[in-house]
Length: 284
Image 1 (cartoon, rainbow, N blue to C red):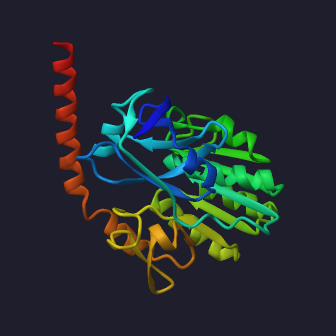
Image 2: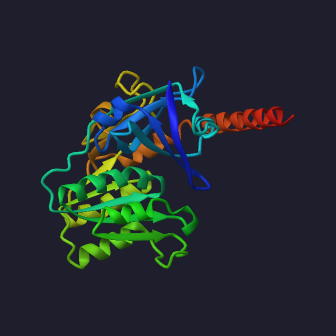
């Protein structure tokens, strides 16, 4: 059992949670993830580690309330316990040897981009962070990202924060203005990562993407997280989650990611009904 030490709402759909997991906190590196299970009836869900505090023995995760399991997780509060919290899993991101890096996060992907930028900044690497959101209301971790970057560019689709456009707009402007990136790290929705990789390929800039396909066991046995990279089958849980973005078959990945959407919707609706019933019973 893993105790929830802190729970903070970041925006209407996203929550930050610190979980007591001292062994994971000591070993985790940027790019790695955990798999949690709320209770014995829950599914196994992967979440990238957003931060760690080895002294406190805590691991911070940030999740978006989009499915039955994240909605169930969000019913828990500080002092409650999560049944399973396994990690660190996956291969850490290789960050050594770069002079100037653009770290790009889209929406919930900023929770994964932040620890990458933090690690690079600590190493003395020049870091530009480009973050994209649909609107101002959904912006998360702005102060945290600003603290670990030389320059922070926050873009919104609707321009509600004064910077209208996509992350690719800011990235291309920086490249054209002589930013001199020798690495781009892109983390977020698959279409966004595909667009970033299409742009950086034109300029010959190495690009790493973090893959988060459907995952079950986290050991490479189930094969659910397979994707095609450089014409070969890879498994995000053990070969990744980081891959060369210029070699990922994004079109295949997007098709696979929507295969279970009807089942996910049904589970989400069922969970909503159960949560509402529990709230009614509690207030009765």
